[in-house]
Length: 220
Image 1 (tube, rainbow, N blue to C red):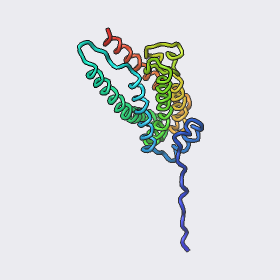
Image 2: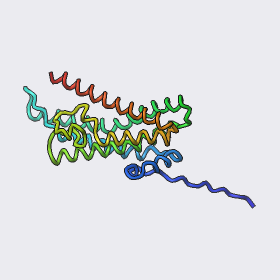
Image 3: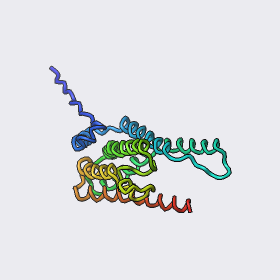
Image 4: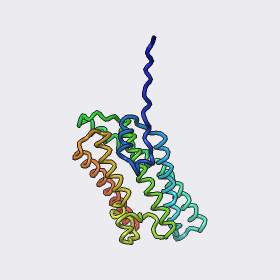
């Protein structure tokens, strides 16, 4: 009699359970990394959030152009925002995971690119929902749609996005999950995992600072 070995089906991680049981999802990601469906979902949510932010911005009023031209410029801005919202998460996740892979290779942790890619995709749901929530609240209460209500800038009632705007609830939440994920999925020590997560966070703050400086230079 032949013995048939039935492979045990590995449970799939849940994207939205990253809010309630992230550690459990990281364990599932390590054993059974999933990417495509979750990547599509976070990209769509990010694109929707970007559209709401663009929709909450004032239509440009430039000297020498008609209302129709201003409306066309505004529409182009919204389309660009949606495209950026769709492609931004994909680019960020691909590059971030590649950098993390180099670090795990140096540390000889044994983590694969697919595991890190899946981990970062699932973590990104936090930021995507954060953008969507903040944009929705801004549309409801008014104010600059580019300023996150859940950020320090929002708490200080600042009307200008900048460094303080990047220090906000969902970004810090993502920072914490990145550290936990690098420890559980990336097989890095807690100290190294937290160091890498904080460096990634500081880089994002640095980009916000550069964006603010650029906007100031353009407006000058």
